[in-house]
Image 1 (spheres, one colour):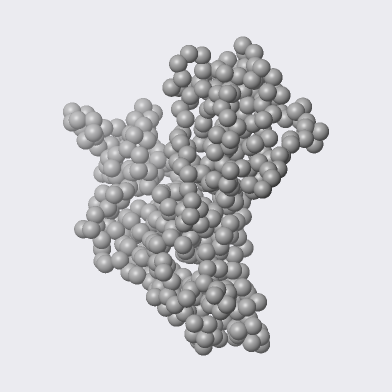
Image 2 (cartoon, rainbow, N blue to C red):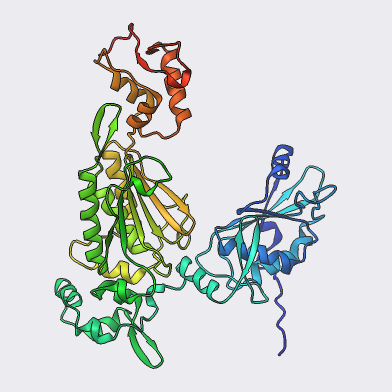
Length: 485
């Protein structure tokens, strides 16, 4: 088999079209002092292009990152700047990275950095990609911490599911016959509500809810999630929702913190979502915690909880063997949805980017009258706005292992200082401690609260009840000279 040589045509993308800028001494020192990590790697200019391509592919297959070529890593003995004498010297590297990676990585940013002593460092900014990429040798890598890992077989398939480039919702479910779905009351109810007279089997085919395997059609994961009466018994991976009420504010909770046994919610997706909303509402409505001697009820806007929960169900990675976990703490609600953020979506662009890992599920639920789900991306906007109306801070987002976690905090938008003074206002016997200020404001950081109390004391607005006790035991009251409106 003859090989095909790919030739980089600089007439199509000439060197002068690639950005060039001067790297200041301060910027260079910052770069040289940087530690390589999940998002940063440095290589000398003499690295083989094919070897460099492995790191390039690993970044694209993970969360993106910055690659600096012309700078040795910190293990190198001697001058770490091994720069290109001219931009043309980097041609071979650019050919391999940009032309011989399959499929090509889109939106790569390339620039030449001119260093003070002369020469160029090649900076390649690799975006997180919604696709799975391979080197010219057909190998697949993923970035892990400050290195790369070669993956193949099932791990590549899992990566494709995670990214959403291959929808797991279209995998066939051989434990369920098509007739079981066709005879389902849930499917018939759906067809009645969307007011279609189309024959059920034709409807499933047109909606891509059947998958052919071994010359036979089977319901796929999407069909089972939507229309099977007990999808949790039919799908190989777990797909229920677990709801906990935990009487603690600690990040690490123990069994004794459970107010009751966790509720497990099963059923097809629409029923599951509605049941989970009802259960969370039940637990939140009856939830309370102490702010010092005062019993305070948890109050969250129902619409914000609903939107985040719906997002967790319709956008989760159903290839992962885990349930959705909803944890209701004394001062927050955490909703953990299996799967990392898909496609181009990152923690920084959640409100702007749109990408659906389960497009069939999203579309089918959205076709219902008064759908539970908005268009992609609108749910989080609605949740943020509803929390703002209620005077609460915007939700927090985090990726923990293989889960995307949304936290709704019972934390007011007012400053810590305002919360403290409001507590003391008009009550001559009221006192406050660091712990109580944290409970009142929802701010978990003990040092932030400490600084707020110190500022109020320096401003003459509060005073220490007994200055002879240890500082960490200080109790504060409003200063006698402060007049409240």
